[in-house]
Length: 193
Image (cartoon, rainbow, N blue to C red):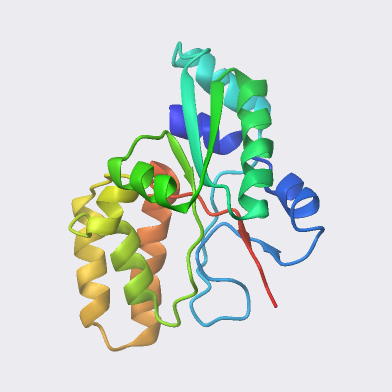
């Protein structure tokens, strides 16, 4: 319930306008519009009232959360401040921890955070992104979230062996839909050039 409450409390539109001045795309998945891997999937919508109700239902009002971010990117600092305000407004007690690159990488590796503001580089094919970020045997997945889901692992392994692009896209869509429920990752925005 806490991840769901946190997700409902994030206003991507506020980030889009305040941090990116309306440039780029509000994104709830790893691939932006105009790419062949754009998935038919929707993540949780901004709903602060629902977020407050979920937090109350979980008897978790006042739960401390630490957001770790790499302070060398101004956008990360600004996103962190916005999310800190949004999560605080629903009842979390939020600490923002901006770190330079080396301490950030150490904190990320140690998993010493409730939330991590982290970018990723564009991957032309989805195998690398999904396998690296969501497969339970991926060291990077374990660093980012420690998330494990046997069904996701099975789907990712099947997608990697499947040659038909439409079938692969269906498999990756199912993976992302599972992620949207379990919230191992939550996409915010895509910077377009």
